[in-house]
Image 1 (tube, rainbow, N blue to C red):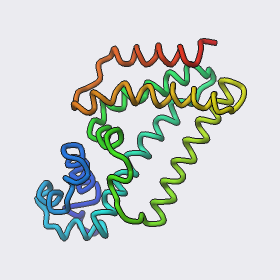
Image 2 (image 1 turned 45 degrees about the vertical axis):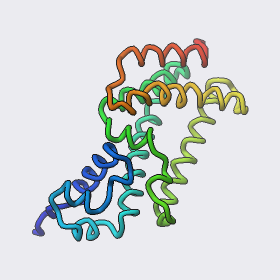
Image 3 (image 1 turned 90 degrees about the vertical axis):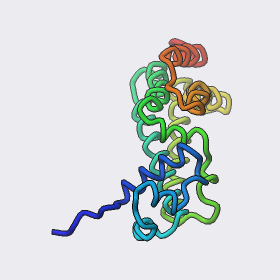
Amino acid sequence: MGRHPKYDKQSIATATLELVAEGGPRAATVSAIADRLGAPTGSIYHRYGSRDLLLAELWMAVVEGYQDGFVAAIDGVDAVESAVRAALYMPGWVRGHMNEARLLLLHRREHFVGGAWPDELVQRADALKEQMVRVLKGYSRRRFGAVTRANLQRSRFALLDVPFGAVKPYVQEVRTPPRLIDELIEQTVRAVLGTR
């Protein structure tokens, strides 16, 4: 049986995420990651071909993790209730994933990788975008009976813009969003989408 690597991809990703959460993507240099782990820099390069690849994979993993939960939350028979559940997924997720939330809400994909992404990661990123478009269109059709520009804007505002905007100030200050935020998000979603 092979020996379990001392510095595996998960431990490297965790250290990188901590550094990004504390100081942004620029803080996550290979030497800083190695120092955080107490590892030689060669261990980082052994697991990841480059710093860019490490940061790209980290960004992708966080976005995929959030989006998977959001998509699961919006699945339900009642359109308004499932929208409330999906919108409230954000503050709940932030409470359990502050480091990930700081990556997702305070930085853009372009902040992580300046050069070209590997084809596999480009495909995964494109799939995420396509999935969100499908989800918003599907929700608009389900709630309003048609996919129009106005219905898509209304759906996006209620499902994404409201919760992101509500929690972002707390994430910037590294503070847990208070429970009142959930109540305000829910009231806003119901007001935007209606109650029927």
